[in-house]
Length: 321
Ligand code: SF4
Image 1: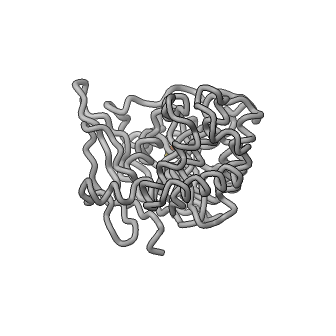
Image 2: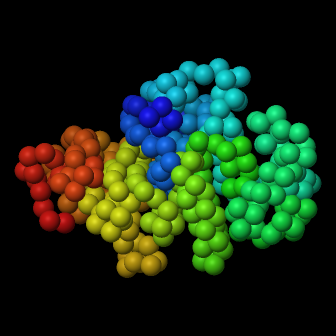
Image 3: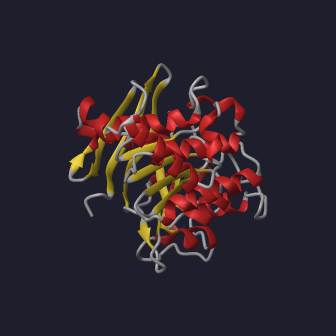
């Protein structure tokens, strides 16, 4: 489908004085229109960098190669004018940190309406009507349109950012850590907001999150990222309820609602990445081959893909882990 986002051989590194920071390593992934795809992984795994690259919002020291195809166009080749035409209108961002993402001196309703006026060339009155409809659709009280951001709770600000994101009826929403720093009750409200967006099925969501409960409830498919690589990809239920990669297992088991068992070791430096499988310094199943060669993404009998030699086609190294 033309409105799918097809990421092919995407490589991103940042030039720094300390060396090149390799944030995304040869990632290929297709995001299907109307679906919710979760990107999960520890801090520094490359999730947000990958999400922001789709909107061409990376810092100036980023070096990007590969392609991101949307509607038969490579987003990475668009000039500034053309990317502005897509950003916000067709692919919108719900940024991290609602505390700083909203303008503190402009009322919330006006901030939602601005996108409608800009992208749909709507008259102010028309934009106001649509703003109130969006607020209602996302189950917020219409009175919040007259509030300033400082008058709202963290969760409400996050929901306002979601409202701004969908204000121009985008085909895609990239939501970057929408429940970060929120308590369980507010996280549930944010979940309900995104579930409302999901139910319309006309907007696909790339959900970048640490919150595995949110990911499990919302996502159709999940990609697990580690040190710039995708280590596991498959149906949400399969990845989270029957994780296969040793890293995904560790991530799931470290969750407070699971065993709260911390994973051994730390993520590697993105400047000096381990050779072979990047997870080998932390992996209890590492064998000689893992220190020397990088595993491919192997298809498992259940249909998910796992970057681990234990799942290679020959099943030569298979262990019931
Ligand atoms: S390839 Fe080797 S080191 Fe990497 S996750 Fe699999 S068993 Fe562990």
